[in-house]
Amino acid sequence: AWTFRDGQAAFEVAKDPNRPFVVEARGHRFVAIGTAFDVRLDGRQVQVTMLEGTVRVERAESSPSTLTTLTVGEQFTATETKFDRVAIGDPERVSSWRRGQVIFENSRLADAVAELNRYSVTRIVLAEPELGELRISGAFATARPRVFVEALTNYFPIDIVRDDESTLLLGGRASSPRRE
Image 1: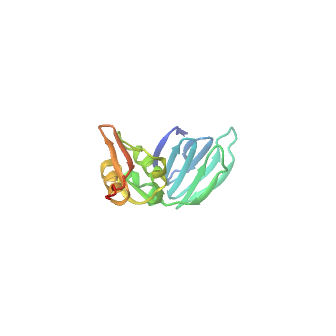
Image 2: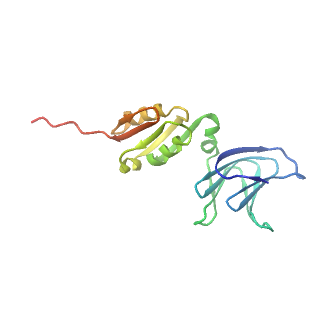
């Protein structure tokens, strides 16, 4: 079994019923025979999105028991505090990181910033927490955080407060002073 501790990985598995490919993560086993799937661990959450084929989901115990079977387009999510759930996923969006892209669809800006920060040494920081509630949609290059920030400053009332080698600090745009 391949033990997954943190991050995100995509697997394409050759079909061989005598040698299933097993990924273990956060108390779950994902057993694949001839398939492609994406595994992401964020904090205490594990998320598996099916790209093709099927994967059997089991509890990783001494005597594994099958919880469910995932097929193309389904997404399994488990955390320590919530029940496991299966929902319809978006394989294109989930696997876009493999092409150097992230795709947001009506996402909170705070979540989009956190996602982009996974791929860059230049950190984007929101100076004001309420900016994190703005909603954003679009596709952005993972290796170009400054292009993302440029889009933000063009479409939202946001300015760059500080720009150095390691940090792009963003704040709300100050309103124009009144003339009396």
